[in-house]
Amino acid sequence: MMKSVETDKSNLVNSQRIVYFDLLNILAIIAVVAMHANGIVHNNPKIRAWNTSLIVDCICYWAVPVFLMLSGATLINYRKKYDTKTFFKKRFLKVLIPFIFWAIFMIIWKIYTKQIIYAQISNIKKFLNFVLTNKEEPTYYFMFEILGIYLTMPFLTLVAKEENKKTLWLTILLIFIFNSVLSNIFPLIGITYNNSLTVQVGGYIIFVLLGYLLSTQDLTKKQKIFLYISAIVGIIFRYLITFILSKQSGKVIKSTWGYDQWHSVLLACSVFVFVKGLRINEKIKNNKKLLQILKNVSSCSFGIYLTHKIIMYYEIIIFKVNDSSWQWRTIGVLTTYLISLTIVYTLKKIPILNKIVP
Image (tube, rainbow, N blue to C red; front, side, top):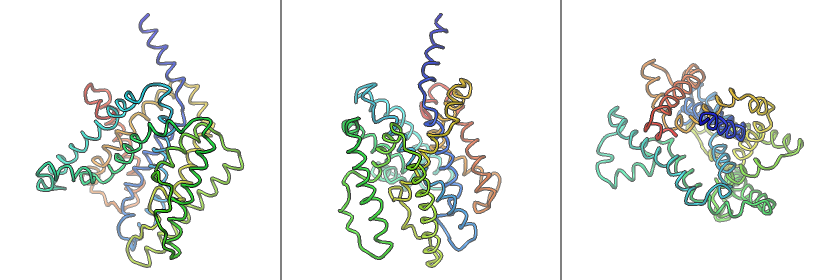
């Protein structure tokens, strides 16, 4: 009888899962791995491989914004399920504890592998400065972005209500114009933009609000087409501006880098809306086996984010990989993801260790 009750409860949870959230979660972490495998985009623009690494970076640039959108889509209505104290407790256990563990682990591991020296963290002040500036692992910058979003979430839940949706769309439009478009376009055409003329809520909040609104409202066919075309224009814009300016200067010019810029916002929204509208969502939802597999794979994404740079380090050493080679920048994405997925999935099955890859 007890087994039957547990099975019914599991089936109920699965039936309530939103498939496209899991799909976006999986696709986003693969895109993150792809950008890191193409990390030469941050280096010498004079080599030929840089040209294609920039293509990958431009196409995959939606990954981090979509993670933020998923936070808005899944958490902005948390008050319907539990109070703010419980919200912070859940976030603390799921995100902050694993981050602290892996930050410390990264420092110990990088000292062991001689990527950093002990003198850099020889006292508490140096240690805290090291971690707070992401010196232990540059890709961990995202942790402070997402933790900042969590700190803001109780406020957002008060304004993100059905009767306020028109106001939220207006707020997003204003953020987009002043924070994402003008602040980016003006410097490119030689006009000094006063950065005080912005919506004073922080650029990344736009993704949280967009995730909430786009998950609760559907766009018309014309709106979707306009969005997709705009996203493609944004990809081309970012590529050409970066390509031309970098080739001219002989170094990477990052004037189009920034997740809150207009092209990034449009790209993230287009991917979110596109995946949401896929017909495969219903097919997966009606297939309990596929739904469970998707759930298991999706649940590993955070752990993959925390650990995949370690996997990449050993792949490069063991297989003597040239990080500029096309094999590493394509096939390496798949191998890194699959190895990381296997390790994280295994850790999730081990008591206590599963707390560091929730």
